[in-house]
Each structure stands twice: as C-alpha cells, then as structure tokens.
Amino acid sequence: MAKLVIDPITRIEGHLRIEAELSNGKVADAWCSSTMFRGIEKILKGRDPRDAWVFTQRFCGVCTTVHAIASIRTVENALGIRAPANAELIRNIVIGIQNVQDHVIHFYHLHALDWVDITSGLKADPAKTAALAASISDWPLNSPTYFKSVQDKLKAFVGRGRLGPFANAYWGHPAYRLPPEANLMATAHYLEALEWQKDVIKIHAILGSKNPHPQTFLVGGMAIALDPNSQSALNDAKIAEIRSLLAKTREFVEKVYIPDLLAVASFYKEWAGIGAGVGNYLSYGEFPRDNSGKREKLWLPQGIIIGKDLTKVHPVDHKKISEYVDHSWYDYSAGQGKGLHPWDGETEQNYSGPKPPYEFLDTSRKYSWVKSPRYEDTPMEVGPLARMLVAYASGHIPVKKAVDGVLAKLNVGPDALFSTLGRTAARGVETLVIAEELPQWLDQLVSNIAGGDLSIHNGEKWDPDHWPAEASGYGFHEAPRGALGHWIRIRNQKILNYQAVVPSTWNASPRDARGVRGPYEEALVGTPLADPQKPLEILRTVHSFDPCLACAVHLVDLQHNELVRINVT
Image (tube, helix red, strand yellow):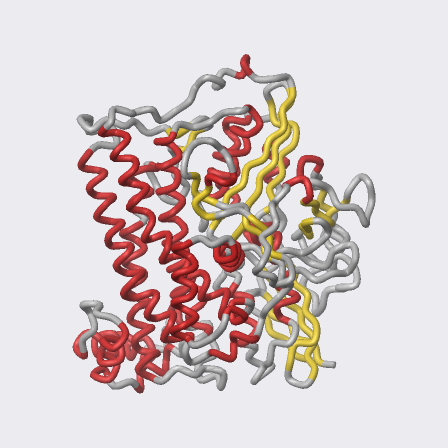
C-alpha cells in the first residue's frame, strides 16, 4: 500500500501535515498532524481575568475577533455579568462582518484555486467570459474590456515566470473541470475580492479602533462611546459610513460570491458524494438577540446533529466535552486513556515524535500537537456546515430558504450537504444570510440611540472586590471556522486555569483513546486521486474545513526550514 505525505498543507493559517495510505487510486487511511505548539494557556495563569481577551486574541492573526469575544463571554459567565443590549448589537456587527469577510477571503484566496485553473484563463475569450458573467449576475464589471485587462495582467505574471500568489498549485491537473472562460472570470473576482475585503473590514476600525485585533472589547460591554453629537464617539456620520460599507458587503456577496460559488459547484457535483467525514455536527449558536444570555435567544441556533440525522437537533451541554491526548504530544497527570473537561484541562507538552527532518511519523503512537476533543466520546465536525445544518434542521427561516435555493439550483438533494462540496456551499449560504442580517442589527442600535439609550457597559462587577473567592465560567462563539469554546477558573481574583478548544482542534484532531479518527482524517478516507504525485483532491477536502492551526497550536520550530514536501512511496 502506497503512502503519501503532504507537509505543510499550504493556503491555511498555521502548519499542517497529512499522511495518507493509498489503495486502488483512493485514500484508504489518513492521519492529520499539526507541527506547532500553543502555550498561551500557561501565559494566562496568574493574570487578571479582565485582561485575558487581549492575550487570547493573539492566538491567531486571521480570525482576529474570535478569541476576544469568546474570552469576554467566558469571564462574564464566571462573574455573572450581562452586557447592555447596545454592546451586544455592536459585538454582533463586529463579529458578523468578520465572518462575512473571512468567508469571502477563504473562498477566493484559500480554496478557489483547488477548483479554478488560473493559467487556463489565458486561453479564454474575454467576450465569452463577459457573456458568461452577465448570464449569472448583473455585476457592473462584466465587460469584455475588463476581462481582457485581467487576462493581460495574468499574461504578464506568467510571462515573467512570477505567478506570485498563484505559484503554488497544480495547474493543468486532470481534476480541473472549469472551461477557460469560467477560470478567467474567477481569476478576475479573486483580484476584486482583495480590494473588497480591505474596504469592508473598515467597520472593525470604526467600531474596534483597529484591525486586526480590535481594541474596544471589554468585560461588561464595549469601550466605545455612543453620542450622536460627539466627533470622538459613535455618531451619525460613523453610523452612515458603516451602513454604506454593509451595503457594499451585501452587493459583492449577492452579485459576485454566490454566483461564482454556484457556477463553480455546477462543474463539480460529484464532490457532493466525497468528503463526508464523521457525520456529527456541533454548533454553539451565535448572535444574541438580547442580553439575556439564553441559548434560545440566539439568532443562529445552538445544537448537535448525530449521524447526519436532520430530524432531531440535540441540545449542547458543555460538561459533556472532554479532550484526549493519547495521540497528542502532551501528558496528563492522570495518565493516558482519560479525557479531561476543559475546566480541568492541562497543557503539559511532551514531544515524543521523530527529530526533524523525518520521513514519516509513527502514527500508532503520538503524532500531533492538536488534542482530541470529543462530545460524549464522539468526534464532532464544527464550522459553517455544522451551523447551517443545525439552523436548517431547527427551521431557521433565512437559512432554510437559502439552503433550499442552492440545492435547487444545483439540482441536488439535502444529502449533498454532507460532503466537501456541501461544506463549501454552506459557507456561502452563511455569508449570504449574515450579510442580509447585518443592517438589521445596525438599525436596532440606531433605534436604541434615538430612544435615548446610550448604555454601553455594565460596570456593576468591574471591581474585583465584588467577585467571589472562586468562580468558573465558559464562553462560546461561532467563529468563521466553527465552534470555539473558552473555559476559565478564577481564584483570589486571578486566573487559576484557562483552556480554549478551538474549531481546528475539533476538526484536525488525531485519533482519540479508542482509535477513532478526527473529522479531517475521516473526511479524507475514500477520496479519489487522479495523480498521487499531485494530490489536489486531498487539498480540496482539507481546505473545505478552512484549517487554522495557529489557533489550535502555537509555537514554530525555527530550525525546521523545509518549505514544502510531497513524498509518494
């Protein structure tokens, strides 16, 4: 049986290695390894809980808001604090635009090149490309002149032999299906998305002072003043700018991203039957509709789906979550074979793998810096697909309408969602429904301000003298990549223990104590490979999860200088 190694997987955040066994042109087994270590949990011990969000936000430089809001909610839960309604609305806008921007970036700049053959666009007829683009959208740039200019730019890249961001791909691979005109259209929109995302994320600068890593999150609310008459506060002019940027956000999603997604997916329908994975899905829910803190008051619902059964949504109980390290480079004081709830979690690193550079990992033992989270000892997939499946099964009207519309246009049934293609389509559906909802949250904020409600922070328990001697809390957030949980234990006003179980920890987890594969590993089994020397199909499924290994683990071995390696034996 042949064995294949891809190290590192590129076009992701962080370092990820995939080892796979091949049989009869398909993946027979797979192992997922992160080659970085995260130690921020240790850095947090002994610190003021109110400062935790500043540190945790540095887990990652891509999903910049997510650990901040999860940390804030964790401390608020521990201390019994409820943020004012205005603060919740501003948080919704900040994390909502983060999700939309992140999903568009993922589709065009991280995942599209798995489906789009950039160099094929050189063969396209710009007039036919314009006709194709006009047939799926009334986007104003759909002209032969525009697509000719993009083609000329692409020719210049290729002619100089300097493809830049397009260099690392398998151009001409037999698994590419798009005609040249579709490839040229997608290339043009790849470049447009770069400019678009730079503009719309200005909302973070307005509401958060900067991006990445906004600075206005605060335990108990937000550190931003509301005053229609003050130049230094969130006033009418800034709200008008946000409204304009939200309109620009929605227009690009509706007229470029979604039409492109459907056009590309129509050429790859067989991928609706590839990459299903574990078939279990977890969503913590997101976007509070008030400041009650109740799960039933979330705009995107909370829930669990087991075994692809959309007829029943199970409730989430965080106490049923545990992390195993039987195949991870950590030690537990209680020994192997035991899962720990994050409140009792330990981060005691013990690398026992081979010394780099090495050919293969010993996957029968420990082989990753990622732990293995399980819900009632069951692996869970998290992410946009999990959120949309839970929302769809819960009867969420905007999600159900959007999902049914996509399925109808692709002429596939709901079973197509459990796949690599379904994962990619779900991300687009979520982007659309959030882009449509964002102006509603802004309207609610404006209405509150107009009614004289300028409250933005609850400072009743800001003073540590009002805290109990000991407290425990947890905070959830549906980050772009999936279910994110933070857990804290506080003693004598300081952090006693802090643990984060991030989306890519769920999805990229190695085997657990029972030898059960994690979601990446399970999704790769059965994947067909047209050319094992160029494993494009493996990249399609892995990228469909949008890995973020920098969040899952956190330290680079600076002595390991190998940039890319693919071995087939």
